[in-house]
Length: 252
Image (cartoon, rainbow, N blue to C red):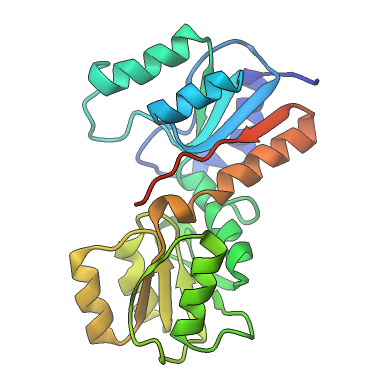
């Protein structure tokens, strides 16, 4: 089994994801430093306690996630839940690498690009803060909201919450994974027939009803499972280290 230095891994990922150009809500890169040598990389959506315990059981040297730690505005003290998580990493000498907006936006390995592959969407443009949201067209066999709803449910193995008339014709689609419901207004202004994201807010329902543009809430976790998997597989193929994705179920 091949190995690489964790600092070399971080340097490569920072360059690949172009982290320097993003103004994010958290630090991107190596958040917790463990052992220098990485032979087994474990990826997952969120660095929760359940995920860390699973990564330890899988004998990971480093974990790669989309949702890490040290978010803007949170209490910086290492107490309670945060202490427990970080103490577990340190006790087992495991590194934590986390990439948020840079992973959402990457044109090939990113969450939005990977979601387009899962749903058969064809990208025609970008929108939103730092160009994270995507515009595009639907597969030729999808012509109305009901067909799209069924397609999303089958692809993501999760029943989405849909605001809109099943019979509504849809052609132009906008999407952005995770908690991107605030991009809905931009999608409407750009002429989308339907917007797909992870979460939904109370006000979003009224906006969808009054604008006539359909809204699909397909799950924050469900829409963001694929970027980190693709990134982990890319690292494994390029450098020969072992990679395993571990999914911790989350209904949100």
